[in-house]
Length: 111
Length: 114
Image (cartoon, helix red, strand yellow):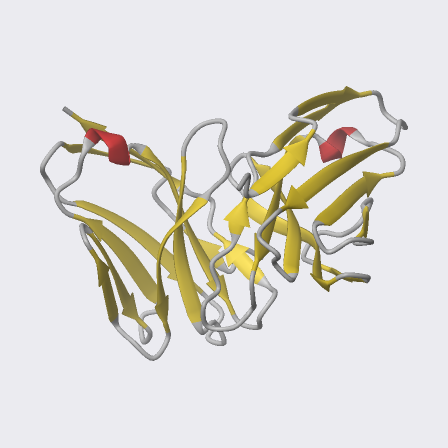
């Protein structure tokens, strides 16, 4: 069972505009959520995270929003840059060592 | 500071052959993990280790074994490879499993089993 879902396999946006990547989860025990970014032929790299006790976390151009009642989180990138083109994975954990990942969304930012 | 390294980067095996993937980290992290990534599936945890000499099963452990004899190394073994094990394998490490939960990933090993 896929407990973390990213329903959009791909997203294309214009440079300078906002990118919104979405993630849904089913396990109400998840208490920590992360976004990872992955370039081709490289491993994922940590981008931003949020604890379940918060509903928003911001780091520069990146903001993650958490809606616990809807079991939904989103990553906003403003403004989007061509270097942001990558695959973005949403991840969630309930106990310390059991992290579940979504299937990823490929973001393309066009100049 | 190399971070997390994986050996080899690519490998082709025939069904039934065995191999070991090596992961090394130089960040003095306690926790290490092995994941596999398949198209449309995201990353799935195979096995993990919370410290030297300890290992535990993850979400998809069947067909794999692991060992953590040294803190900096985490080995993933395939005793009898099957085509279903064709995948990209990522190793990761983290300092702790608490609220600061960032995992650092290696570049991956692409394994093809024919």
